[in-house]
Length: 160
Image 1 (cartoon, rainbow, N blue to C red):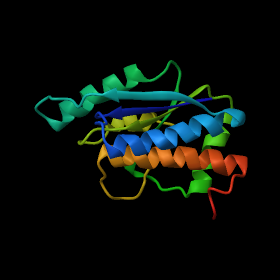
Image 2: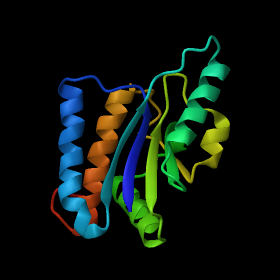
Image 3: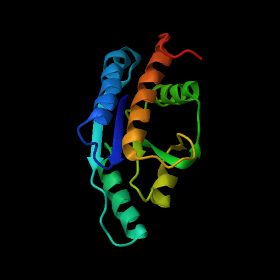
């Protein structure tokens, strides 16, 4: 199963990008034997329409167009369920074991996600109830994807 990140907002060069890339590189190396391949990151520019509703609608349309064909997708949203790392890993394994070919994790823009897009997601996940910059969410997601691969492989990186 290929894992993807589809994010509104661009990660600028610097320590944040380096840290996210470090975890993705670890995932690439350790995920393959588990049937977890790295698909990539799709970055979308923030919408510039004048109203929040228009911006959310525009971003939702571009997110859906950017998803790999027939991908199952999860949204990262403060209203989602907050799993622990083991539950997150188990969820990824469940999608893999059910034959999902592409699993995408969607990070919305500053205005959040359009409710209709959120309702079409297989699941909404929260990294807490705080509103976080997309760069930090991307780092947290990259680390949790790597952590999930270590949990599924029995590697001691995750000590629960």
